[in-house]
Amino acid sequence: MTQSEAVFEIMQTILYGVRNLDCPDSIKRYGACPDTRFSQMPAYNDLGFTDEQLNGLVDYVYSLAGENHDAEAVENVSGLLEICAECHREDGMGYKPFGGPDLTDDIWLFGNSREQVLDVIANGRTESCPAWSATLDAATIKALAVTIYNRSMGY
Ligand code: HEC
Image (cartoon, rainbow, N blue to C red):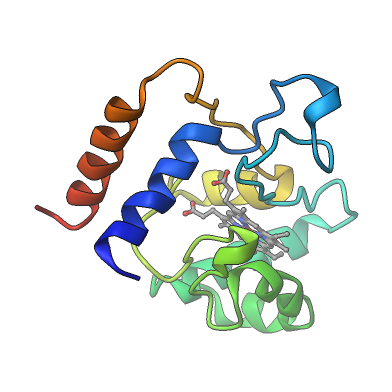
């Protein structure tokens, strides 16, 4: 991806938000506002996973991130891992089209304690980021996108 493409990707997120539902029903597509980013981390508690399975999945996530983990617990949930691969890829590095983040890096969106990782897997994540297209002008949105890009590159 070129620098300009990356900046445009970030602009789309700022302009249209993430999981933004705050628009008239008449313009919604598939239940969400047009052009919003959409992704979902499912709530595996609601999907009937046992506490033991949920805890084993925490060890799986730690194994991907190179943290201390219980290898036997990971082995016990090996039959479930293809579910996670759908959005996080088999190697855990994240599948962008489905919005699944990289689980192998040391970035923890919601914290890295056992309780926090367990909470994400058990209860899912579907928070939203609002759309700024009606609030900020084009120059401000572009400047924000460039600033975010530069920061992500460590400039
Ligand atoms: C349908 C797609 C999807 C599936 C399937 C899925 N995830 Fe996720 N996962 C996501 C998305 C999207 C996020 C980011 C949520 C956000 O940013 O609000 C996420 C976030 C996470 C996080 C938080 C990462 C961090 O940096 O803190 C963990 C841990 C995680 N998923 C583990 C799993 C595990 C384990 C499985 C399999 C049981 C799984 N996910 C299955 C989409 C998915």
